[in-house]
Amino acid sequence: MNTSNTTTLTNSVSLYPYGTISSVTLAPGSGAVNTTQHGVNKHSFNNSLGEPVMTIPSNSNEVIIEPNAALIINGAIVINGIDLEKRLQTIETLLYIPSRDIEIENEFPKLKKLWEEYNVELEKYKTWKRLTDE
Image (tube, rainbow, N blue to C red; front, side, top):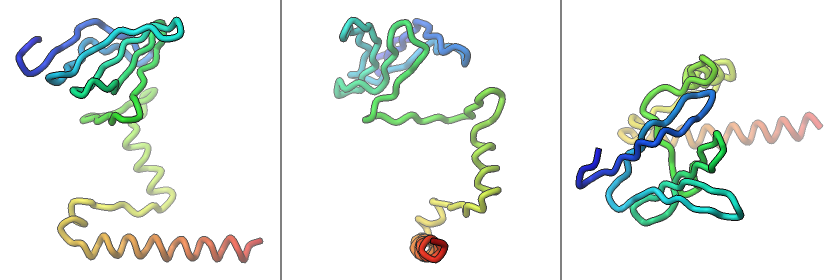
């Protein structure tokens, strides 16, 4: 798929045992670059500023997201048959970690302030507990 706005690369990249990436769509001005550094070939995907955002080293099953990039996933992450989001929710529940609703906090700034105050107070109690337990 090549249009004036996007470029799609269709070479498959194996991410064994997780599957393959069959295509990557790039924004205008961005591109893919093959390089060799210290004898290692790698395939980099650059943003529209020419900065690498993702690198796939040759002869590797790794995909490296560069520090200046973000990975946005609009779907499930399943690791060895376990949905990561559900697993994290279970951990939060078991550890009694209160959840936040950022959208409502943006609408009602007092909620955000209360959350921040709660965390300050919680840290005071934790510090006191550490000091008195020693």
